[in-house]
Image 1 (cartoon, rainbow, N blue to C red):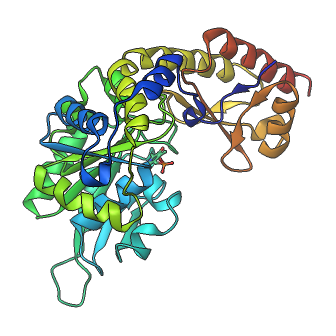
Image 2 (cartoon, rainbow, N blue to C red):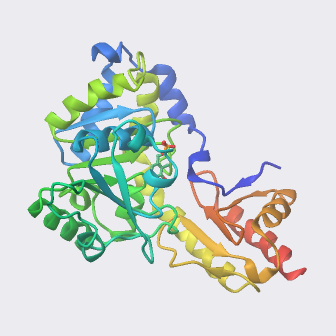
Length: 344
Ligand SMILES: *Cc1c(COP(=O)(O)O)cnc(C)c1O
């Protein structure tokens, strides 16, 4: 029996349609800007987001780093919430490579408000580093897939513009946010200066992320991608899978959200377990401290019953739903969790 893998939505394997498209992809040297499949993916991403241009990058981390560097000068400050992916899971790349100082703000639910941000903007005094960028994350990974409403994003972008501050969206899972909010990604992300989104998460591509923005922004992003070692050659084999991810996979994300809600409902009724926050997309974070188990032991017990999930702290577990776990996998996983917690 294969494992029911709830560790992340990055674990999805390319579908057979993706594998076929990869095998048959028309390719060229993308450093020479001659790969037709990459060109097509970039054109479609720009169209879907209603933007001038897009660039394929190997990872979301690189897409975020390129964006941060292009919006800032070394020595400036970047506002980000304290649980943000850019701050916690991309090493210190924005400091190392872009030379900026993150100013992190703790939030209740991962979702910054303009009020949080305003008080963190440095005053225009010569001995203070200047705030040049705000990074938002939607959906918010470590806040249990929390969804930032459109109005909140728009307000931040609008007010930031008045202060001459740029706003970048870490939209690794922006398609999940779009499904949860019933809006298009173009509408949701309209006021941002740049957006990064992942093809490799819930959309199921084996590799790849995109950055979208103005033509000028993408023209500056391309040489920076090369500087970082991200100039790729016949990468149309990956873009072919990315195109299927982009065109066909968003429509099924609602299924992942339904599965996550079902699991959250069942977990909430189990002894010793409480859901952290509100499950709005495909991520569930839950506290197990009252079960008397720590997350390391809990994960090991799950694994011995064929379920994979990781702790994000000694007391909190995280589970994600995705294309490679079905409704019945989710139900089976819940049976196993129930058995573990009620046996105690
Ligand atoms: C996965 C993820 C990224 C990018 O991760 P890579 O592994 O570098 O592709 C960025 N932001 C968030 C919120 C993510 O979940």
